[in-house]
Amino acid sequence: MTAILQIIFDALSLGSLYAIGALGIALIFGVMRLVNFAHGDYISFCVFAMLWPSIDAAAVVFAGNLPTFILIPLILAIGAGLSVLSEILVFRRFRNANPATMMIASFALGFVLKHFLLMLFSSRPKSIDLWSNLSLPVEVAGARIPLLQVITIVITILILLGLTAFLKRTRFGLEMRAAAENFTMARMLGVKANRVIMLAFAISGMLAAAIGLILATQSGTADIQMGVSVMLVAFIATVIGGLGSLPGAVIAGFLIGGVSVLMQVILPLDARPFRDAFVYGAVIACLIWRPQGLFAPKSAKQRV
Amino acid sequence: MSTALSAQHVSVSFDGLKALANVVLDIPPQRVTGLIGPNGAGKTTLVNVLTGFQAPDEGQVFLDGQPIGGITSHRLRRLGIARTFQSGRLFGELPVIDNLEVTGVGLGLSRRESQARAEAMLDWIGIGALADRAAGGLPYTDERRVAIGRALMMEPKYLLLDEPAAGMSAEEADDLITLIRRIVAEMKCGVLLIEHNIGLVLNICDHIHVLDSGEIIEDGAPAAIKASEKVRHAYMGTQAEAGGVVL
View 1 (spheres, chains in turn orange, purple):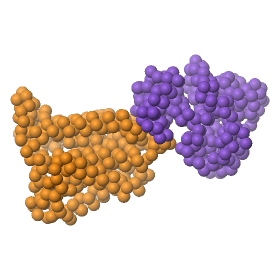
View 2 (view 1 turned 90 degrees about the horizontal axis):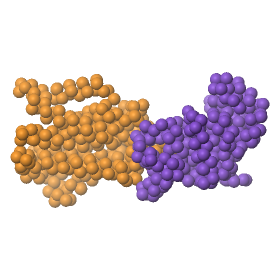
View 3 (view 1 turned 30 degrees about the horizontal axis):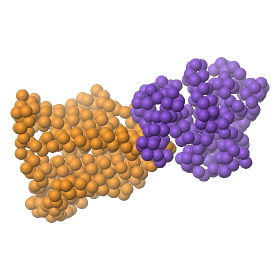
View 4 (view 1 turned 135 degrees about the vertical axis):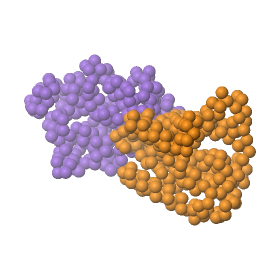
C-alpha cells in the first residue's frame, strides 16, 4: 500500500513538471501557432539567473541567497521578462510567417540562449543549494514522501486553479481564449493583439521559471541541458493532448509522467535502462491511434 | 446629407473584374432595407465596403453625412456600424455568453460590465438559457441569433445582416422576422438585410435594392419589386429554376 502511494506521488510530481511545461508551450501555441522550442532554455536561464557568472564547478550563488519571498517573485519575473523580450525582439517579426519558419526561429533563439549561458558558466554542471531541507521526507498515510514532491504537486494544483480562474474570469483571460480560437475575428472585435500575445508569453515564461525553481531544488544542480529534456517531454505532451488544447496539454503531461513512473516499476529489471524507449513507443502508438491528439480543439485543425 | 449609412457611387473591382459598379444605396435609421440578388452579384462586397473591410475604388461611404473612407472596420464598429457574417464565425469552443462578452471587452468595457450587458442581451433575444452552452455545438438558428446578439453588443445604429436566414425553416424564419422587427423598434437600429429568402425580404423590408452583376438594377417598395419585370428576369435566369424562388 505504501509502495503504491509512493508510486502515485512520484507519478504526480513528475507529471506536474511535464504539465506545467506543456501548459507554457500550449499557451503560446494557442495565440500564435508557434511551437516555442526555446522554452526549455528559458527554464535553464532562470536557474542560472540565481548564480553569479563563473566557470568553476562550485557555483557562486548570487540571487539564490535572497530570502524566499523575494527570490521566487524575482525568478518568475526574470522568466516572464525573458519570454516577453524574445517575443518583442524575435517572434513579433515572424507573426505572419508560416509555423515552420517560426519554429526554426525558436530553435535558433534556444541556441543563442544556451550558448550565452555556456559563455558565462561553461558546460560543467554546478551544484546549487536551494531549499535543500525540502528533500526531507514527510509521512503521508504511512508512506515517506519527500516534502518537495508534496510541494511540487500542491504548487502545480495552485497554478492550474489560478490559471483557470484567470482564463475564465478576467477580461484578459477571455481575450486570450478568443484569440486562441480565432485571432482574426478577435482582433476584429477590438481585442488588442500585442497585449494578448505578450501576456501569453509572460505567463509562459513564469511557468518556465517555476519549473526551473522546482528542478534546481530537486536535483541540487544547475545544468545548461536541464530545461531541454523537460521541454521535449512537455512538447510531446502538447501534441498528445491536441495542439492548442490547454486542458489536453495538462492531462497529457500528467499521463506521460504517470507512464514513465509506471514503466520504471513494472518493466523487468533488464529493460529498465531502456524505459524511455518504451515511453516514446507508447507516444507513437498514441499518435497512430489519434493523430489529432486526445483533446484536439476544432480551431487548431485547419490552421496547423 | 441625410441621416443614414449611405453608399454613394461606389465601384470596386478585383483583378479588373467589376464587383460593384456605381452603386448607390441608403440605409436609413429605424428601417429595414433589403438587398437581394443572385449569387455573385456583389452583395457581400457591398457589405464589406459599408463596414470598412473593403476600400472602394471609386465613390464614398457616408455615415450620417460624414465620409468614412479610410476608417478601419474596428473604428467603424465603435461609430455604430455592426455586421454579422454569412457563416456565423462564432468562437465555437467558447460558451455563448463569452462570445458576446468578447465584443464588450473589445469595446473597452470591464469584464463585469461586459457580462451584465451580455446577459441582458441574451435575455432580450430570448436565448438566455443558452448562455453556458458551447457556441460551436448550437443548432443553426441559435447560432445565427447568437451572432446577431454579438453584433448588437456594440449598441449599433446600423446593423448589416448577411444572409441570416440561410438554411432556416419557414417557422424559424418567422422568428427571425420578429427579432429583426424588435431590433428596429426597440434598439432604434437601421437594418440592412441581405437574403436569398425572397419571401422574408418582401415581408419585412421597407425598401428593397436588387443587385445584379455589381449594379443596382432596381430599387423600391416591396410591391414594386415584386411587380418588376427586370427583377423577375434577373432572378429567373439564375435561381428560380434551381431554387424554386417564387416572387
